[in-house]
Each structure stands twice: as C-alpha cells, then as structure tokens.
Image 1 (cartoon, rainbow, N blue to C red):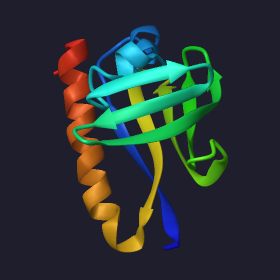
Image 2: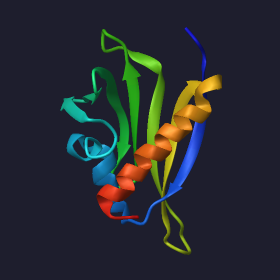
Image 3: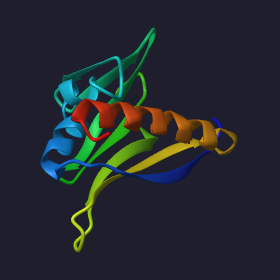
Image 4: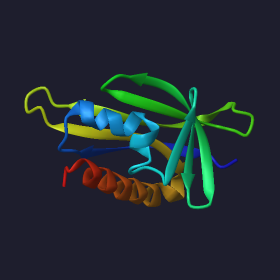
Length: 130
C-alpha cells in the first residue's frame, strides 16, 4: 500500500460556527457540498460520488467545533487514514475558518488540495459565504 502524507489547509469562511457545524457533521449537510450523497447508519457514514463510494466511521466530534472521520475497510475496520474538519474562531476578530486535515500520496497532495478547494467553494455557496 502506498504511504500517504498528512496535510492541512485552512479556509476562511464567513459563517457562524453553529451553522458551519451542521454542514460538516450531518449526512444531509455533507451531501450538500462534500459528496453526491451521504448516508449514515450509527457511527458509519457512506460517502457516494458518481459511481464510487467510501465508508468512514465518525471517530470523534466536538459539537460546534470539529468532526473526524476515519476511513474503514470492507470489514468496517479502521484504516490508518482519516479526514478531520475543525472550525477555528479567531478570539480577537471572531473570524471563522475551517481547517481540513487529510492524507494523500506525496505526488497527489496538490491535486487533493485542489479538490478540497473546489469542495469548500461549494460549501461557501451553500451557506451563502461567497
């Protein structure tokens, strides 16, 4: 298996943390911008894009602040990879941003970053933060 590297990207988002959290933590919110469709059964979320799907377990969440999804294999066992969405609020300016933590092969980080930029652009349109 190819080793993947961790990377982080921060996106400023003009939104309240509470509203943003609904879009990063619920199947209906995630299906508005992250995947074509998102289903959940218990702690497991299935992300569907066109003709492919991936399954992840909601590994942790902190209401109004962050969610972490761990990718699982066909037997619902955790893999070593995850993605995490953290809502950051600047204490002085109250500016809100979304920190994305994800993994990609070293030679695909740029491509993965562009994918996140497109998805976050969709998220901004959905919540009216453009």
